[in-house]
Image (tube, rainbow, N blue to C red; front, side, top):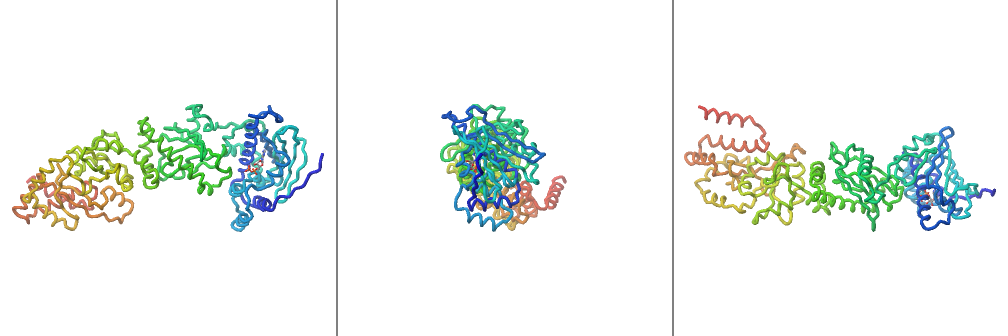
Amino acid sequence: MNKPENFEFKAEMKQLLHLIIHSLYTNPEIFIRELISNSSDALNKIRFRQLTDTNIIDANISLAINIQANKEDSSFSIEDSGIGMTKDELVNNIGTIASSGTTEFLNQLKAENSGKADINQLIGKFGVGFYSVFMVTDEVTIETRSSELNSVAYKWISCGENNFTIEESDRQTRGTKISFKLKEEYKKYAEEYNIEQAINKFSNFVDFPIYINDKEIKRVTAIWQLKKEDITDEQLDEFYKFISNDYQKPLSHLVLNIEGNINFKSILFIPETAPAALFRDVNESTLHLYVNRVFIQNDAKALLPDYLRFVKGVVDTEDLPLNVSREFTQNSPVMAKIKNVLTSRILSWIEDLAAKESDQFRKFYDNFSSLLKTGLYTDFANKNKIIDLLRFESTKTKENEMISLKEYVLRMKSDQKEIYYISGTSRELVENNPNIEYFKKNEIEVLFFTDPVDVFIIPYIDNYEEKLIKSIDKTDIDFSVNDKKTDENAEKNTEEKTGIISKFKEILKDKVEDVVVSKRLVSSPVSLVVGNTGMDSQMEKVMQMINKDFQSSKKILEVNVNHKLIENLNRIYNENNNSEILETAINQLFESVLLIEGQIKDPNEFVKRMIGFMTEATE
Ligand code: ADP
């Protein structure tokens, strides 16, 4: 047997090892992930080589990872039948830092957080995952035999810090075994249960069987690595439940295999139901990120825009280093590219659902559209795709039926130039809003914006296919569409009918911006509308909810001078423009529209006046 040969680590390596050994760790169990990942790489290499080359030793042994752990003496070893290492490889691959120009970074790190270095960041920066074992042990032995015919086996031993030795070994089989004794404070990793936990967390989808003390551990298949047509529905359901903690089946799934300028495989799911707090639940796990089947994180937020965070699933890429840290994933251009691809694929997927599986789409929409809509003001690049996914009930849809803006435009009246909507808290409420009467009578479709977020998204849509989207609460509606009735009315709206308007102005001068003759009212006597720059009333309500001090702007009162009541008031006005009943009636009318809008501040006056009227009427 030869004598051990002594080697010294390079200066940078020494510094790094010093940091690893003397730092505090939040997650020491990642050494298991790193060792399994190295074994898995070595097994992948030999499997690949065997495809074309059978001139290797042990060509027929099975490809597997074996962990032996003994809690009596705290020993731990991991062995693979992978490609192994030659002596040169041992010296060059194990003893050096992958990236260069690191001294400065190391000094900086040392100065900044002595004793608190993030091990993930260290090994991510330097590509030295193997050294994470020095978190949990004082001395490591590597025994390895390369797959080359006639190869010699070697034993590498190091205590970290300064140097390592290499000598020949009597190992016979191909592959690598790494063994060590766990430090007292980490001896729990010699227990099968804790090892299995770590494997379940990080290495569930490694492509080779893993044994702990000769028992194979059960794992879920990495189904995203299978061919799309080979994945069964049962597998999909099982996998979805595994990653989402949902007990139900998913509503829909999407399998992606992206190759080219960015490479990743992914399976995505839309859940059947929304979480209880869709908007608040920002910490929900969303996408699980894997690098070459090795688990990185279960809430890779940087992979999805916020408005799509209801999507669950997995992304596995070879374009990231294994040891990416959280900070890294947040700023990585690779992550950003994956996010772009995912976003556009998800939106197309939903579009597809809408076109082909309307029931599924409707469920999706009921559950997640409020969140999806927020994308309109955060994701300008995909705004048009999101707009096309919007659906609304309208004056022409049956209860519960919904249409898209595209459908709206298709069935617009030939001379209609604008898209109309009304917002409010429920279909029933908006359908009874007096401002809608004109549109109903003239069969002009009005969309119902009954989702509270709708009023916020409107400013971001503005127009669709060059048609302005307008609230029918506003004054500047184009009343020329298909409307002979209004023209006839206009002729009838002569001065003798409109004298009462000046009385309205006099009585309500502090409460409204203006009083005008209405073109839109059919059966109601009065209604409130907003000036062109004002917010519609639903939006004001939401603003008041958010900010107690929010001052609503003054409205414009529209008066239907063809309504019987207004005609009567006008007649009284022409006889005696100071008649007391005029003031009471005008105030009552004004407050009745406030009441409908839920804006009445003090109902007492209103009720008193009403009782007065009823008393008179019954005398
Ligand atoms: P990384 O895996 O990020 O390259 P490591 O420090 O973990 O960095 O490993 C350094 C190198 O050592 C690997 O790239 C590989 O060439 C070699 N190596 C480590 N473990 C094994 C193993 N079990 N079998 C064969 N080679 C290995």
